[in-house]
Amino acid sequence: MEYQDRNDIHNCVIKLRKNPERRREKVYIGCGAGFGGDRPSAALKLLERVKELNYLVLECLAERTLADRFQIMISGGDGFDSRISDWMSLLLPLAVERRTCIITNMGAMDPVGAQDSVLEVASNLGLSISVAVACEVSFNKSGSGSPPRESNIMEGKAISTYLGAAPIVECLERYQPNVIITSRVADAALFLAPMVYELGWNWDDLKELAQGSLAGHLLECGCQLTGGYFMHPGDKYRDLSFSSLLDVSLPYAEVSFDGQVCVAKTKGSGGVLNFNTCAQQLLYEIGDPGAYITPDVVIDFQDVSFHPLSSCRVLCSGAKPSLDSRPDRLLRLVPKDFGWKGWGEISYGGCECVTRAKAAEYLVRSWMEEVCPGANCNIVSYVIGLDSLKATRIIDGNSSWTTFEDIRLRMDGLFELEEHAVLFTREFTALYTNGPAGGGGISTGYKKEIILKKQWDVKMFSGGLE
Image 1 (spheres, rainbow, N blue to C red):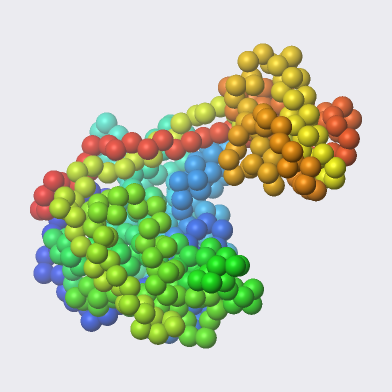
Image 2: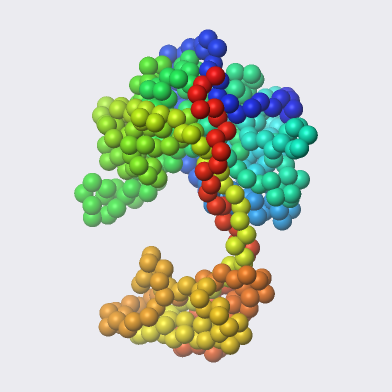
């Protein structure tokens, strides 16, 4: 077992790599997870089926899950993704055998804690591995720094900056580890880092960085590229069979030193990989397609094209640096206390079920106004099966309501005080014997509501390259 030196801290100025070595002509990078709830067994299938994989990226951290980790950590739980031990128990034996490096952002708020967990798993498996950590560091007034740990979180030092590929590349250069654990890193950068390291790219190779970031962006959501979240019966372009979705392959990319990118799925797998799935994923969360901002490069996606080479491989080209090729600031996430959230749900079925839901909403709002005047302005109501995607309060009558046979009322409230959230759940539960007929299946709950606010902070990387 090897613990990397936790005092080996470097600043966040991007310095040009000195004589970067081209270690491979091509590098193969797979996506083993596209979000925190992904399936470890699917990642193992990818690792088993694609023997040439050099890297497997587990992208498991979103702003929602980061906020959840913050809440869990300040309540005494793990600040890292507690499922990391399950993932590593399944993947490490074959990954170590194949010499496939695993890169993951499951470190979340406590990457060093995640490092400890992975080393413990490896020890139990009888494996000798190296685990490196790439994360943001908090500095105190004396100038000393440390990775995020529970003490820092409890002191309110929970700001997370979207880091780029550079700290991961440095881990690869210094340690050649079996596993790299990160805190909040831009999703595409998790994939870009091994390209930079293996293919001999430098930080001023903007064309290659743009193409590499395109590959990372396409891979980052896992099966969304290969047919997951795509199937739509009745649409001739998206009408996949149920069985086709049963064995959807996670995607991987073959990236050449000159920036050529080919995304792929495993042969004989389900799902689909084609122009449409690539185009859908390309547009996912990018904002301005002419200036997609990452910590490493600002990318122009407007001329990207996809050329299917087979049913399992698509050539991707046309990503280029934007006119303003480097961001002047980095995005930071700051936890903010938004009080307490309370919620309740109840089902109604049969004749006039929506009208009964409307009556139930009226009663809960009225009861809350009696015991907590003014609370109604912070409560939103909707009917699942009618208007839940709009999330608006039921107000006007509608003759079409009589056609619904099974609906569910949902009400959410945001309150300053915990006792008001608890009170809301109790008033909602009172619908059982005090509300309209035929209501059932009530569920309620409340929790502390922490939201991560976005700030474009002072740039941590230099305006130029050193």
